[in-house]
Length: 197
Image (cartoon, rainbow, N blue to C red; front, side, top):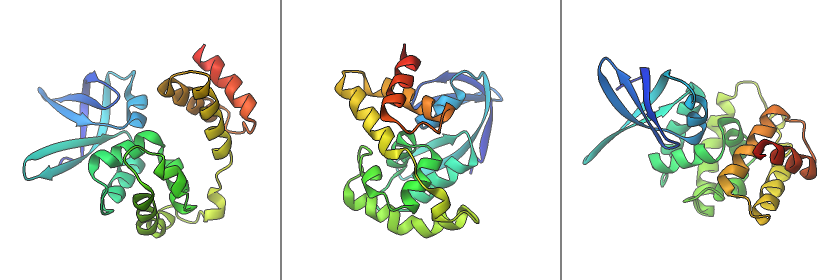
């Protein structure tokens, strides 16, 4: 198994990248979260997972070990394949996904394209104990989700105003990363609009 690739980034899109190592270029499938971290890099160390099927071999890449570990957990769930796991990790970052699983927020998971209510509940049932163990001494109470409702309301409001979803989600995420204390929908929308402007 290829553990990681360390080389030049010769091509990148929000869904895949080419990493050149020793004259060989590897096609690596990535999430939006990994893309955002390598978007401006010329060289990178990409952790990988090789998916081998009867008719196909494909590489999935991750900027950090936390995302790769969650990917491996996700594909252990019946009904969740590598591409679905990648979509989940594109929709929410590692911390958001862990919080959703620990707090049994199947609504958040079922909003991901390709994840229905039954699959969302199965992910939580199969992975909750494993995720809690991996977070060490952090209790579920310590992983509370302030602002999730505020975030969802802000996204919905901006979509209703006609802004494109990818731009909205990127702006909201950027604001919450820079100012996680933001609790007002109005403030979040104003800051997101500044990001987009």
